[in-house]
Length: 300
Image (cartoon, rainbow, N blue to C red):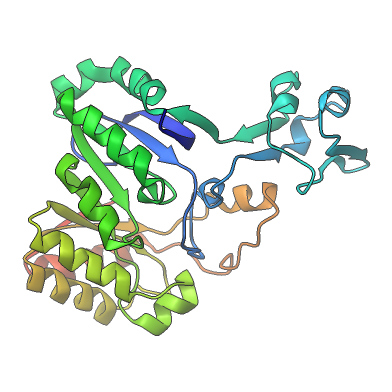
């Protein structure tokens, strides 16, 4: 059976495509955007997360761990990541949910059974199902089968993608996708390498390929002050969209709500010094794009 590592299935989502949707988050991403607000989906493997403020020091997890990967200290529970097999035994037994397993292996049938519970909402709102991540097309076999099964049931299908996958991955899912939400962060390759740790060329090439194939594409741009919010950068994205005859663009203002996640996961948060854009700044960028003929949306 085809499986994937799923971190979350978010119900009643209204920001990941048209209508009311169920958004399925797959773990694993090939990029390392400094502003990523889902760091729990960077790794392709399940992970165990520890919340010290929830821990009551009962140490029941230490006794239960089959790989003896846990130890106690004055700071709470320590996890030996090399020894940990991410089995989740500790999180299942923790009485205060101080230990959480991020990601579980699920089959296409299991995920389909979960999203089908909301079928009535899809019908009434012209919504459907969205695959997100991470980068959902990195788990391609699952994505293809799941999207195909969704379309067989009449669900509108959307893929939220970074664009950083082989072109063949898009060809594989294209027959089963009604809409692509396509992230454009930076067009300049040097800046893309510096802030995303990957070249921009594959992202741009795949976007052109999708348009040539007749796919419906909405562009989404995370707006990060001092990194990609200069008016000339926004205009360059607009110029590319005009060239490709794309009209829909969503500006996603940077926020710091994910910083606490990085702390819990012991990951560096390198842009804590960057301030969130003001509503006036966002309105200015939106007005630039409107004046250039695009349909502009804030958030989503």
